Length: 168
Ligand SMILES: [Zn+2]
Image (cartoon, rainbow, N blue to C red; front, side, top):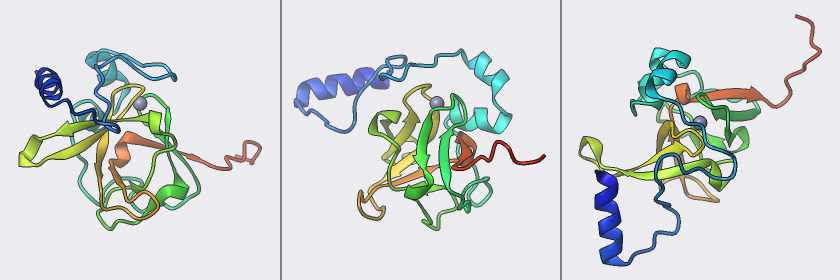
């Protein structure tokens, strides 16, 4: 329903948002699209991951696995495995959630207007699977000035040097 309203608004105003691509669910980028039913997601994700990724929940601040995580590596989508954020763009925003000033590539994420909870925010989703990651705010550090405020449970960390031959 919200999409219809947005489409009508865009058509009337003639505004062409350049960085907020309006996409219908299932239309992905070049990296392929992962489409599963909610029941399939429920079976593959933990209860908390399902609540956040599929039901747009938010984990409590300072409780997630990565808010204070500083190792070098890449943060991938916990649902579909697409790499989303690099540790080199992670910074401490003091908010209790992992914060990044940029995504690995612009086509990894998707933005949507979110007017829930009486606020106007921009939701960040994984473009590959449509999973809810968190929100983006324009109060981040240089060079982008953006702050991706992401739920830990939506992410899966991959160390830069996994040392595959390390003894167990
Ligand atoms: Zn994903």
